Length: 314
Image: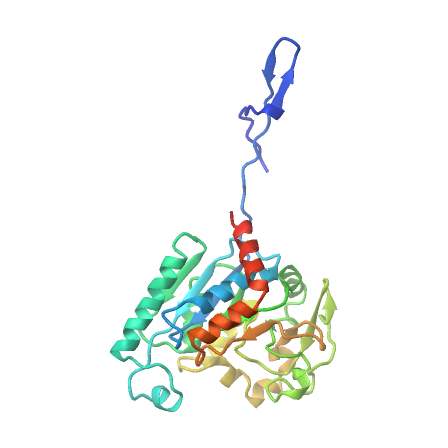
């Protein structure tokens, strides 16, 4: 690091020579920010609680649980649009459709997010003008990511326990063919045996990254969309498999042909087999404002998290 030898004069930088006060030249060290290695994509859409943004607020505040993550790591809030009225996803899956009321609520939701983060330069609000579906929301947001690593987060999943971000990065760099995707489980990590999603030949068995760099990981034979950490390069592989169809990635990546190759495709849970959950799922598709308010009030850590975040970004 180079130094600037411009003289600065403070009370601490003065020498008493008996009759004169002489200024001492001190080197001025410029504040330098390291190149960011991680970005965050938050996937969002219209929910019953919108245009209120309390759900995003809770997730944003909980990011301080990611120990070692830069406080200037870029964040993209990617907001999917509405499906057409009467379409398959509107009728069969109850996705919010493009009624006049929903359009107004979605626009108000996006604007509330813009206003909330207008002074937070690391946050970008990215509302789509047409319905994308999960995989295309991620794909288009990733095109704006310039970092090697990325968190893909659901807007209704909140970090509840500390995560050693520094250890995850180090382990992925040292074992890129073993630790490719880390999921933060909604339940106990023993799910790697109990749940069809995650059980399989290698599930819950120790591998090269089970206990390294002061962190632990639990191997699974599954793949889910719940909050996870990976690389941009990895998602390039996944998106190539998904192609142009509109689909949740887990519906494809958890099929038998990928589960049979789970050494390569099976995700790791963060933490050992007795740990978890690391996130709380508040079920944004159905929860309303009063219930969200109760969750926020009952979570005694949130005021502490918010204070810590405010102090760290000043």
